[in-house]
Length: 269
Image 1 (cartoon, one colour):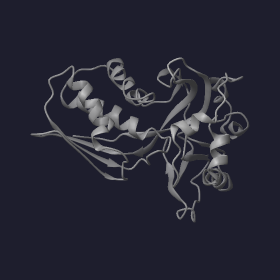
Image 2: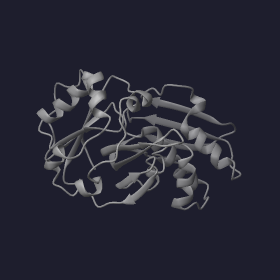
Image 3: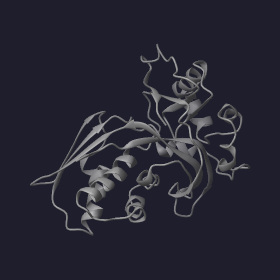
């Protein structure tokens, strides 16, 4: 059985405060885009995970799909399976690719083995795996707060626009991203700011990670500049980077950028 985990972008990202547990409270808008991995599950005589496509760094045994399956096996009598992941969502991009894989895999297991888990139950498992993981269970636009794992439904529809994404060959660690941030409450709520026309977002909606990350990694700043030069109404680094997206009225001409970036053009919202 197959499922296709999709990525998300952050429309604004405010780091509000540091928590006692070492995490940070934040506010952001999670918005799903049609840039997808592919996950396949088949029953097997022994547990096996393999991947193809974009290489995934780290130990295969620590993949979030395997961790998700172990969480489910703690509560259900599940057999050994063979998992194959075709990786298309860039790794370390701020697009939630690993979290999406884990959440969609929980949905896949729930469907395949008829576990009858509801949305809230699946989100409980997801919250044990990553701060943004629970978002991908419903995979619809939300205002996210707390650690990024609490949600409010929000009215935002970008289907009339075209979304492009540039991914430079650079890695931004979570530690680096947070080290340069001075947490503080935002003066204006993102829930109100996204009601503005998209063409006005540039003056009002920000990513708190951008100032120091773009300074430390000029190639990311170059990606953002290139998207605006191509006619983007709004451009922002997603999450803690390193990808940058642009929202356009029509399909962007990004020819000539393939030598410096992975280019994903005309992504449907």
